[in-house]
Length: 275
Ligand code: NAI
Image (cartoon, rainbow, N blue to C red):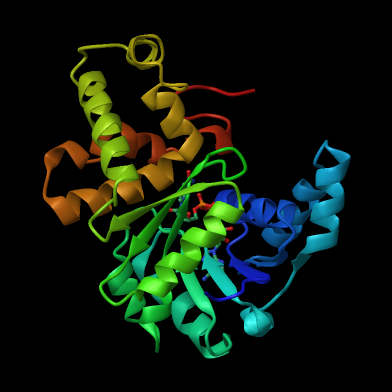
């Protein structure tokens, strides 16, 4: 088993900063970077505003912003959480491959891109896997560990062990579009969109059915707003292309909200408005 002490996280957006928090709270040293230094700074500022004094202390002690991926050279585990785009992620992985130390594990937080294909950008794909945290990483108890065609079993085992140490339950998934979590979630979101587009039900009623009838904590439209509608479109396109199933088509309603810049909670409006 590889010892993991220092973790590099590339991408300081919604997920990157949340993953950084989880590692810091469990005593790992974390280096956080983004191509946009302003985003790294705002992530650090948000982390330093944690209400709980002990959490604040751990974050201040353990999370360090860095400007370039070269600073990840001493990391034992590097997780990329950049935008859900195959070409961007491949480029980022090739850069990480150049700087990471021999034996380091590289992981992707991709929601739906092929881990096997991403791994082809690396000199040692055996040491690469999906480590898919759910949003928000601090709260959600699952980590989906995705085994690409070339991922070694001990890489999967190390990532599962790290996830357990973070208080999460790992589930190992095969490298199929959307893995387990997003294949199931976006079947629900896709069907909800079809009901709404056809005028068969109101979005509030669809959300109410899932919350009160199925005991889901959030309805599918509330959850889509929480994930980010731009991220939802990217995931649905992957699922649609990969599985050829029309239920995963983003469809006109979701696409028009994204075109208008209504991306959900992060922009203050999506399916719903937020203060
Ligand atoms: P986000 O848009 O909030 O953050 C992405 C960050 O990546 C941005 O700060 C951007 O500046 C940075 N970035 C883009 N290109 C870069 C590059 N070349 N080098 C360094 N940084 C770069 O997106 P979010 O939601 O954090 O998603 C990140 C990843 O996590 C995606 O793969 C997404 O599918 C996945 N994910 C998202 C979840 C969600 O609910 N939003 C849940 C689970 C996984």
